[in-house]
Length: 333
Image (cartoon, rainbow, N blue to C red; front, side):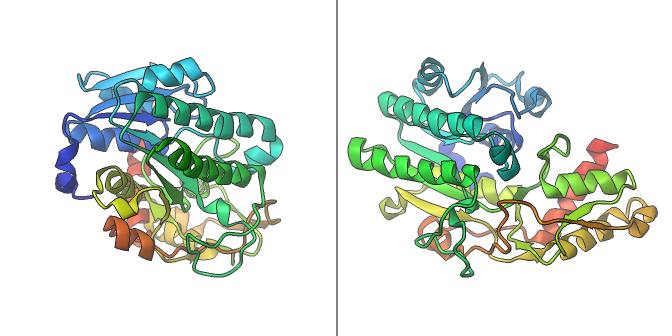
């Protein structure tokens, strides 16, 4: 876990977490409540889960607003009297956006614009939002640096790039301070292993635990900068607490700065899960076709975040997977 003592200044601050019942959002809510912040969660439970926030409902510092960011009145209600906003609400998944680009656009662009307008009208101090590494698109150079992107390869990637453009414009036009965090393949506790668009790590964990064969898209040489949830929570906290004015109205890679192939990932999962069930070591791996919209390799430079936000990732893929597997073993059995 991150050392939250650095962020005690958030005590009694009013902080809105959109998508607060989701994987990343619920981890943010949990940490903020430990800091004695006054947390409001806005969620429509389209992809989030009530069980993620069940432990918080009895906390006097926690307020749940069940609503949709596509409704401007709801956004205004949620943003009222907030000091900071951590905007996590979105429809993720490249394949989902390819199957249904209209809904992804309605939520990720229309909903995002509603939130910006409501944040501006409420005169919040800072608006921090979940951006995406998918914005790098077809730009092949590694590592990825914030100032150089390519052409988006999916409707989802387009929506997340539009978010960055809108945020930049709202600062230039209205003076709303924003920070965008380009998430790189986030994983960890509470990430949902179920559903058609489950992320690769929880999906593979679930399959291994059931002695089912995971399917690797392609030959397994595609690589990603897998980023443990605690690193993401740290970046969000640093984004809302930084006093460095140069750090505002920027986008930052939110990652580790290392990459792992899918074959390496599967072997790491096998190694950790086999500690709990020796039979998992013998589960066969299946290879399928490459997935539309996927980029071959992703690796982030985190130098900008280290320099301007004092970011220091606490978890690599190894200790992140170890902690994740332990959580899944206790919660999925």
